[in-house]
Length: 364
Figure 1 (spheres, rainbow, N blue to C red):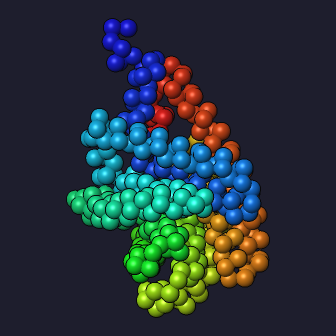
Figure 2 (cartoon, rainbow, N blue to C red):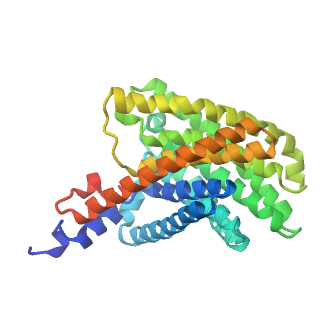
Figure 3 (cartoon, rainbow, N blue to C red):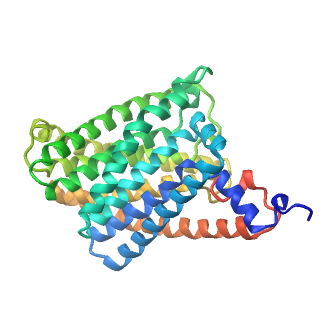
């Protein structure tokens, strides 16, 4: 070859192209492994939970490093992602992944790390919460905007609720001076997440009812609709357990009752989303192959399980806890299957010569 930089058979070249096409939503891997690790820890399966925690932490570090490299070397590609409604909302997975990792580490007694990660997540939540909607939706000249609404938009809601969960998790061990602030953050993030869920639900519903739906359009990210509702349940249950503070005292009854309603709605969404998957893959024969968006299916499965386990224990609802425990093992099986498929995909992409990177890249 006359130029190594143009040889698609070289590992370095393929890796560079893979970083360039890295999808912003890949932190969903951190979210999925982390929340299933939380569920396993709650159920007493410490060894398996620790293994998932290792994957959670390593994936967070690796994806963060790759994202920073991409920001430095491929800034224009990242800018295009911010302008693309189908990819931009994936940046919110960084916030949720940061908080899920922090909450899981807090269960090991690393509350200082949880607090530090919460600070990072809150700062990112404030910045991205305004930047992404503007660059991907409001700041674009193309209209109508609603035609671009899709399941990834629900990650915006998940990010908000993850802030609420992390703040409520830190609160019990915080000093008395910090507890009112953490209560304010938790209740505010929970409330914002619910309003965003309603807004995104309207946009996505309008898109589905107004424009033709192709089987390829029903991507795995639509499962986040259930995950966003499930994490709202978990956030509500954690807020109810917080110590007395003005914001908590004013909303405790509302939050407790709403959490049960949200769990019921998340349960109702489950068969709807499964039916959509059947319609896509069985009836219309869209191949079921690995794509990064599959982690946006695994996270809702794990989050629904954890929400059920936690809500069942907190509100003395044994049937809810039982459903959560059963769902946890479905999530574990789905995670292991997807993780194996991802490793195979990475091996083929990086080690097989002649791959077309943009279409089948490492993370794209």
